[in-house]
Image (tube, rainbow, N blue to C red; front, top):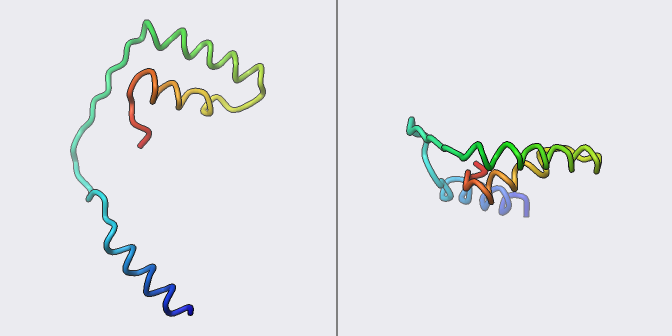
Length: 70
């Protein structure tokens, strides 16, 4: 049973290479007029609720500005 799991793990690890390493540069530009008020609002909400700001900032970056997570 353990051998089967190890064999399955090794075969999955070798076959699921999504993208190889590259030196490709990505340049993401955002609208600061829209971003600064959103981040002040997100920081205020994070402070009032007592949670980390990343929980609010990451969805703003991905949804409002179209910046990918990875």
